[in-house]
Length: 313
Image (cartoon, rainbow, N blue to C red):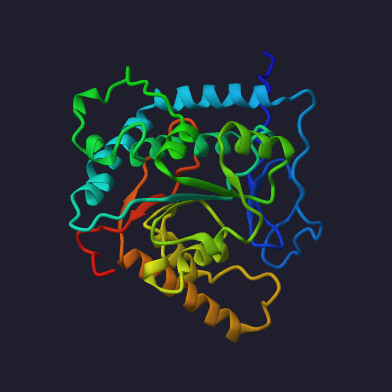
């Protein structure tokens, strides 16, 4: 009896951190040893090549396809309920309401190189923006929306460009891995404002929605630090802070260049722990559910400032 051949194993996904602290997920580097004691590649990361014959129209079609699949998923409806019934009421019912006036997206990754997680992250964020922004629906009207409307036939369009421009929201996006086609799609089709590293960090304010899932721990701490609490983001969607703190407690922050300087390492680790703990202590949080089509939501949470409890500023 002939033996069945086993299907080939999928290449293990690997994290690669560039010189600027950005983490990128790659596949197929089968023989590369990325343990702490092995040197990382010294060649700077370059934007991926644009696939042959791929056009702006192709990206727009991909965008529409991922958007429709996201809207039909059970995970989308769970996310929608989280924002309708937990996040948004903290804004609309607050005695002192603060509007979100900008969104900052960090580390999305290239959209033209076939990385599915980047597309899922993008359409997820767009669906959140339509819930938070005044257009196409205001937060107050969303908060009182009929819960029965939340069903699989709900197909209100996700048009972040239209929503943000009409509500005065600016969407900034930063990732050094974007290639020219990514930039054209994001700036022309979606009307997002492209930033060069590291200018996004100085733009984060208390009126910011920060979207930064799975950044390297050093970069993540930088985004949440602020000069003081008044400059921390109003909403953050990113790696679960408990996981970050546990990682720092157990393993310490990964430092490839300064391993011999233990005192500096300990000081930096304690600083990051304080940043994460302070933000966790001054926000309400909710772990995002697992997404059936991709694993990007793994250990991802949404954090938000409860305006009923934080009104002194």
